[in-house]
Image (cartoon, rainbow, N blue to C red; front, side, top):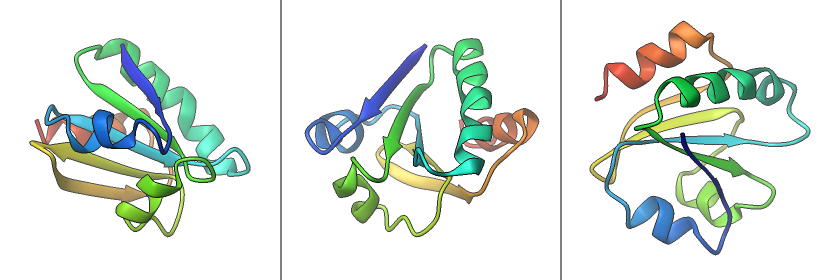
Length: 105
């Protein structure tokens, strides 16, 4: 599973400079919906180790949150070839998460 915690220091190299398909997950420790979503993200990541999943705590990865204009969490963004192709704000079921990724491969 390619899952990495993003912070202000590694944001550019891990997210902006890397052109592979990836899922950006913006959340916060204080967010109840984020806590519900996290196990689903982990389960999906274990089943799909080829997908790079970048986890952002909006209180710590402030540059990333500002760059992607995050106004609510959880927020999931699919990046393909370095471009945002889909965004979803709010919790998702595992099936919805899978659909979000698969339709953008």
